[in-house]
Length: 323
Image (cartoon, rainbow, N blue to C red; front, side):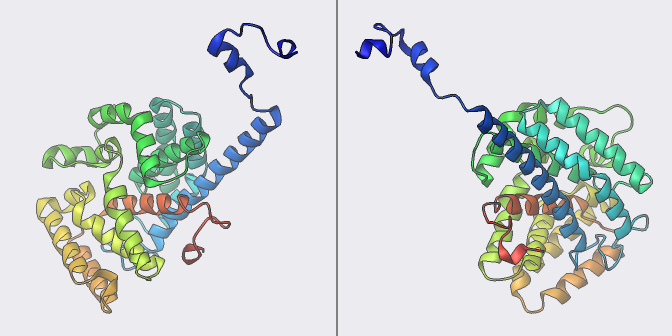
């Protein structure tokens, strides 16, 4: 009787594959709907992370809701205009990443987003580095979701390098048409890495510096603001920030590293006087017109990864980070 249920001589693995369960149509639709919702959630988290960086204070040399830092050409309203212009971009690049789109498609989305940003800000570069960093991370996290891999630092970084690592490495040395950006010029003049090199290496400053410091502060019972402050100072200490080199040269970069190291050596936000120390550092950077914008972009990227990895919570965020 069993012969009525299957061939007498089944043709090996091909026959078994034919009997493998195929996702039902309704399950496919459900997965597609869930993936679309996840892309929207990532886009909201990306914008939230950029906003969380903007409102942080004291933030040495950088624009906040309190003051313009070392900048005369932009303020918090400029950044808000930029944020509104980028809303659609993060969803689109997450959706493309979920499909495993090639790097040149992701790059086209980023270039279009940069143009929208510049139109919204009157030609002022507020988020060029963040468009690249947060965009690539959104793509990688969305791909993880599509492949049903749990979001973790290791899987996100591995996905980024496996899916787009070769293209990112080529992008590091590619010369875009027209005038090179300030970051590219500084990287060449001072032999330091910029945003492109960070991407090609899988954002080591995010995964090896900012996130561990941020989580260490949270583990010690301090709040989300303290975690962001400690992570920012750790980034300023370790990152060769092309924004700083552009404004202050090697001497300015040495000052940023020294002041950041001193802040952390004094205990960072565990020190009862941390706010005064950070404010003093802010004033020193403003006096020298130093603005560690690269570190700020990487801080926003770390906020994005940390919060995206916490999406298992019903609200999407740990209680101390809900806003």
